[in-house]
Length: 115
Image 1 (tube, helix red, strand yellow):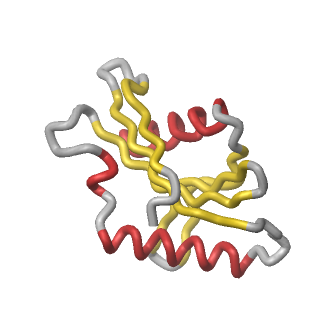
Image 2: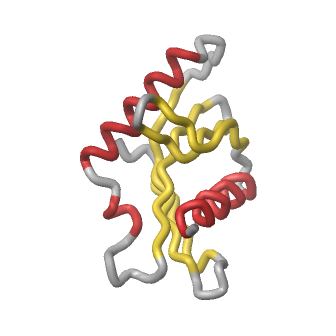
């Protein structure tokens, strides 16, 4: 499955950049958030978009306004349910991955603090 492969590649990429992965595929009602990470006292909510080439646009272009609202909703609920987290700041990121034919990441774009 392309989406799950992209999420694994995104988690590996983030770990290589010094992020700690706290959770993946967090659900609230019918909404889902792909990854929750931490780095330097920041809580980061991450939507991952994976593509094979750019024929249908870049991954970040696929994050619709509705999807943004869903990601925000799940993020807010996560913070409510984990009051012990005393992070000073939290943000929402997108990771867009272009996967090569062999399944490796051809390109990874990490867009920070997008909404």
